[in-house]
Image (cartoon, rainbow, N blue to C red; front, side, top):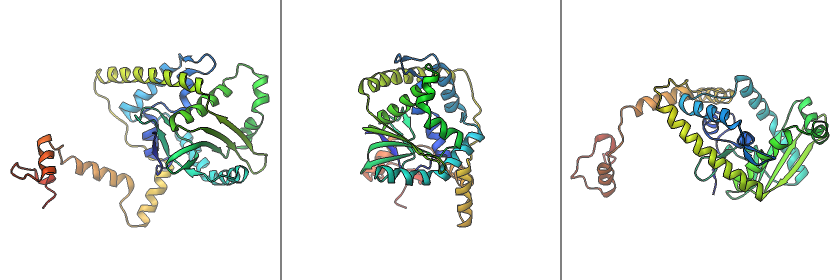
Length: 288
């Protein structure tokens, strides 16, 4: 079963933290070539980006990109409402989804779920006017440039969504109030998904090897935590409620944690068994 982060807001620092350290569906086309279904040479650059994210807290998205995500988030409810009317479905927000081992990820904008099982993944966009026309005319544009990668990129992403979320269907929906909507529907292509998973697992092995190699080369000075527009909004809400600012609260928690050390196996066993004949450090003695 996939791991589903229902309550993580897309565009938040927590989402970027989850999203930036593992391969995600929007970049699966950089790992496997969609037409030949073989390992892609471009995976080397992507692997280096992921290693940088892991060791330096480096964010591949620029501030402009973060603002673009935030603008899309603000307009998304209108597009979602139209999709729910068109398909007569009820959608649910989701933050991030990973495979059971946490090594592959996807960020559908919405999902249709039965309980905690995802049946349909949804990309629901509220783009600019030029981008909307690109979506509407995509099929004809592809014929104008047969070697264009756009269709292949979308196939990898949608099949990747279904792979990670274990869903049966993927929907793409794009809405602008001044144009017709764009709607596309995909189902599981099992041979494609099988080969995609093989390539992704091979890439994961390569990524772990590269990460260990980079760690062995010395000390890295990580960037400070990234505050996104969404985090600034949440921080303002917390200040209005008289709560500490979000970064301050996190930093305080880190300072507090620095005063503690992990309990030993013997101390954990004593706490569980209630055997206080062995000394338990004050910070772990919950009976007091």
